[in-house]
Image (cartoon, rainbow, N blue to C red; front, side, top):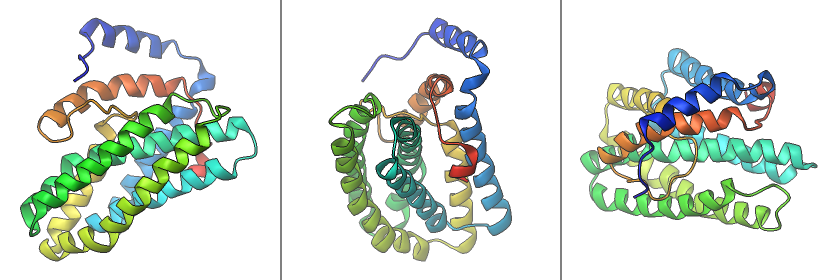
Length: 231
């Protein structure tokens, strides 16, 4: 496992973030947009866990489509950063909250959760390569396509089999509570891929809390889509 950053590293990064130019606030705007979006969803509709996870899936698909349809490198880069942000947070959120629920509530849940974690690991490995690419790189679109193909089967299986199973096993209140925890947890997890990090709590939770601040500082210096296009 990758060694954890020192306290001095955190202090240096936080100091640097305070000096970031105002033109880089697109990253902050994107984060605030999603925070508000999930807060509004929770307050107004009280989604079940199946709704919260499906919404993430649709957001990931939107990012992919936007990258493929982009007609210039700047737009492609912005949506690529958003894609990494969405997939990274979603994956860790599932591993911390959803997969332990699979293990606890559905028959054969431990095997199901382990298979999902294995699929996530494959995605994380490829996402790590992708997040370090430029939109002009020749392998940029092929790598993105590989990741999305991996995700499509994973998403289909979750939505058609696993999520209906967990919904049947939970009461309405339990499902709503899990959905709220899932959405809340994603505010405190890494926004970049870290393939060498643990993929099970409690160790994943601890490492996520330590690496997330560094990722969020890095995001300040990245370009993201405008708020109107991600809403």
